Length: 463
Image (cartoon, rainbow, N blue to C red; front, side, top):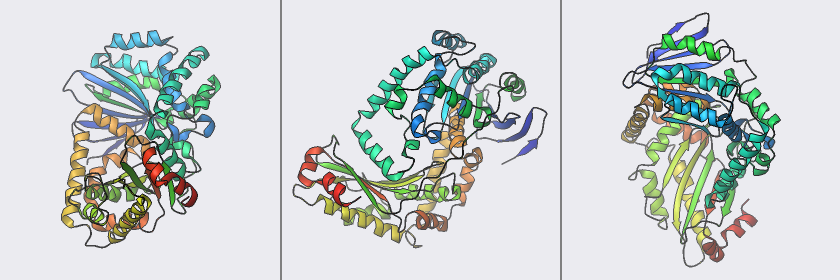
């Protein structure tokens, strides 16, 4: 990877390196705004994306869900486009073929794809949206109801109850930092003052990154970026957040609203590694997860042999690791057939034992073969290369990793994965799985639960 460094009056730092498609340049403005530019002249289009380190991760209980509400409010008008009608008319005038915004646990992002000759207008469009939103009180009242209905719809889904129970069990102190939708009461009473708080604390240049890809010439784009974003005033930036406590003991949760009768979903969840705390362990975790999902692999076949009640043989056995700055998670997931007679809890206990036995075996050199590790790394490389296939997809992924870890993490990912050894995978297993307390979650149909009493038993004896 080639890296060049240069300083200019405007840009404190500039990095340039070779990307899979074209050259990618990165700059940092004096106000802290990071800028990533990828030049690709295949089609006369350009995608502009601006991303913030925000979302549920920065929320407190009295702000839970308001980053998502604020995302909606940015489409309601600003100092340049006075209302939503003018805002949408500008999108139509620019010929926007693709535009939207989104809120996640660890980032908020907005993007637009337009003809490249509209680049300056597109940069101005987002600059006014993020710097000078109107945040009108009357529009806020209307949008509160829109978001309320959206979240209430999501919360009516059967799986929501299980997800909420898992969040509170895994992250008891700050479970709301995993809840993007948020609390309906908080949303219903959201004020303009709270919207201003989000704007002034999180929608600031030193907590943001601008990603531009497509038919551009970086040397021509940079002055336009300075024109529209150079006067954006710094703020506090990403806050210092207290870490989630590790689990101190095994925890169980059970929910009996599964729509599937005769089958029960069982998941074992282990905390970590968090990319913001131990990024090095995440590479071994990724390789581990890829090996674990081999349908002919040691783990799946060993567990199925010990627990033949598993539905579909090894087909519905899965394991993996989910990278997050704040709440990395390793998991094992299964479907069990519900027996006609009592004894389901005993089967779940046997499944737990089978999994912990296999985890203990994973630290031996013989468990993961060299061929399995090599194949897993190749699969991860293939997935990563496909994710970089187009400019806008590439920078969308880059923006995600910028928010959740760092751009260096993403850009060096393939080299880091290639360097993962069997010892690194075993180190991850030792550090985050062996003899670690974990969450057992059970999702069962109410009629099946009436026979087996899982919810009642877990509530009385397992927490």
